[in-house]
Amino acid sequence: MKRVVVTGMALASSLGCSVDTAYENLKKFENCVEYWKELDEFQNMNTRLAAPVKDFVTPEHFNRKVLRTMGRVAVLSTAVSEDALKDAGLLGDEIISNGQTGVSYGSSSGSLESIIDFYTMDVEKKVRCVNSGSYIKMMPQTTTVNISLYFKTKGRLIPTSTACTSGSMGIGYAYEAIKHGYQTVMIAGGAEELHPSHIAIFDTLYATSLKNDTPKLTPSPFDKDRDGLVLGEGAGTLILEEYEHAKNRGAKIYAEIIGFGTSTDGTHITNPCHETMGKALELAIKDANISADDIGYINAHGTATLQGDVAESIATYDIFKRAVPISSLKSYTGHTLGACGAIEAILSLKMLNSGWYAPTINLNNIDENCAPLDYITGAGRNIDTNIIMSNNFAFGGINTSLIFKKFD
Image 1 (cartoon, helix red, strand yellow):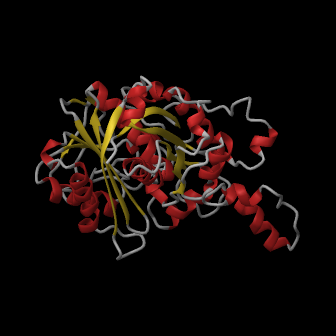
Image 2: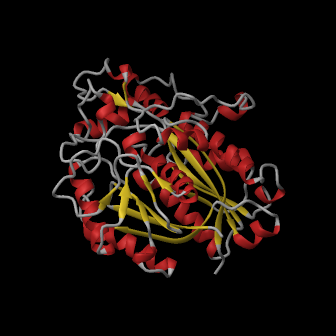
């Protein structure tokens, strides 16, 4: 089996559009949630909260030809992937287009504006809004194919449109593609654009926070007074590389991926099942060939929903049998759906290499129904550990767990 390392990272998020900026903004202990006025025009919408990306600028060299097949989610993912390849020192390298590089990437959906174009056609019975790029923008694999097209990759293409695990699944499948010798380099991650339709989905499920007058106080993962999630947007890309190839070219290495586990509940489309959530963690630990005691920190999915937080905490405790340190970065960025697994993995690697781990903000009173874990609060925590875990869970009962090791 091949070893797999991370040699490039980049993101766009409400915390910032560079990895260093986003990481430093964690230390301000303030979320990026705001009253999103775009929601005011929708009747029967209860929440008015969102966490949009504000500092992202479409690259000037993304000309009309490039953009004609891209909605916002594809633009975000492709631009961030370009930055990640630059960070890895691989942008323009022949390995990207000679078949040795693949793409494993996802989002919950394509650009919803394009989906609405098709809906308009059905309502008006006129082909007015649909054009040659409409389907490419709306299809669920739009991020994956646009990244591949832009960089002219010819290796494996793995669309991971698995809702909230799209980013983590993208990383996990990319890791497996290199580990088993199918590819040398993988462009991996996930993205999501912010759209009122996404928010409406969770609003109709009574899963959104209604603290419209106090956006800085929500979401509150694991807190007994939490009242739901807040949606955000963004993109995150990791460049994964076979270790010997990275070493031979003198690449900087952020960390090694040593474990990946995924499972499905097979029970309910939206309600989580802690037994099978825990199975994903167990599989990742087995894949890494370590003990749960070796893991010093967990980046939680932590959405601030009642059932999700409780099930996740129980699943974690069932596997770890101890109060392992844990925190949720969604308390800063909101829930970025298909992007969260990648954005959170990137920021977790920054924390791994610095030794400081961000707290869950707005966590003041731990829900007594949550398992007895070591929930990091306050000013964060300095933790001396070489191994961390990052977990994500999605509608459809799709569970993922990634394990990273500090590179020595």
